[in-house]
Length: 112
Length: 115
Image (cartoon, each protein chain N blue to C red):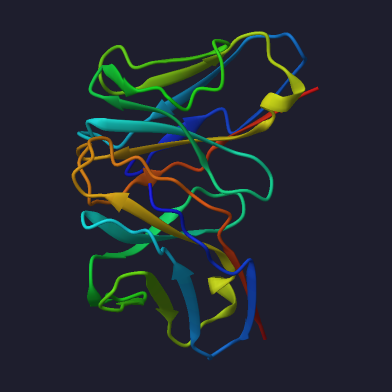
């Protein structure tokens, strides 16, 4: 499984854009990239998933460069409720079980 | 309910006791997962079920931990002779199938405290 590295924490302010970059230098051809969000006392929640280039949904955007050795989760105009831990995960699309390997995540604190 | 349901939400027990944690996945989801999360860390995989069978139990820490899913829906995680180190939040997740890519739907977890 490809190892991921992401910042331990980030601070931001309401209304700003937050970008979290995740490194996955040994990502394999069949690996895809997924981001989850976790609030205190809740289970992780799927945010976005991608394989290459750019993916956008109603919550976030995911930018993946051509070499796929990193990815950036972009949260536009954050609010206080976006304070959470964000996990970057890499997994093999061929693998049965869709087993996810979580790292320590990035703790994002949004300040007023 | 629409989501993954876990009971109890909180369980306090004494060292050496037996504990059962229950997970009710989203209806129709064939894949079910158990994870364990210690304070300040990311979730750690324990076991994965495809239907009734445990397809991957490589994350179970030792033979005190066991999980079943007899009818392919509800699952029970069983911990024998609990130890203080077993204290954690136990998360259950389900997905429509076991194939990636895809989304796992997590419950809110069962917080286990072993005194």
